[in-house]
Length: 87
Image (cartoon, rainbow, N blue to C red; front, side, top):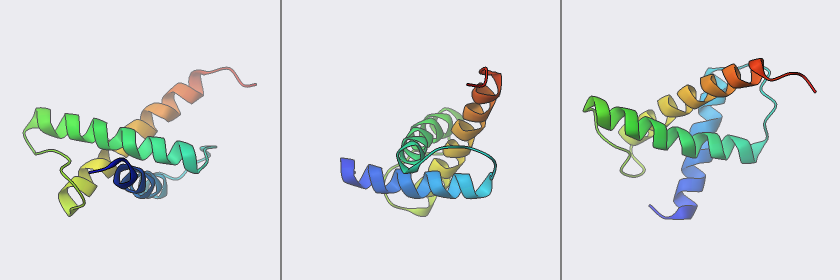
């Protein structure tokens, strides 16, 4: 997949992850895109380690892996943000 495909894939996966886990996350479209791309990487790494497969392109399996990875990244984001002192 090209860089443009990863950006679109990241936006969609990140948006779905934020929809599944709603909350007071203050992040815009750019952070959502980074969340989705990082989720695809994390999900691909975890699923490869567990023997389920990898993120190979625009298909249902890769999309599910990316969304699950984005949920993991979103959870970690929430934990880190709770521990930071308020501005």
